[in-house]
Image (cartoon, rainbow, N blue to C red; front, side):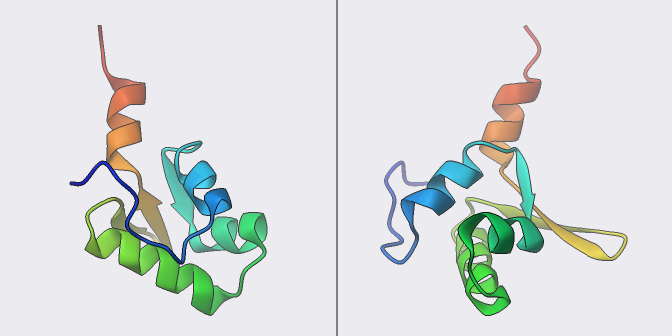
Length: 77
């Protein structure tokens, strides 16, 4: 996984959002970034394709897990 940001279409707000939470949902991105459902889907799907997020369906909702951040936050000493 590259350590640099390759998605020019993504805003700084999206990057900040993803590194502030170990997971997100489509609705969170739409609300926080004030983007349409289509745009949020495009952003999240691209990040999943690149391996930066992992999409997980729980009941009826899709969650997008930031595995790297989740691992840091749950790492036992």
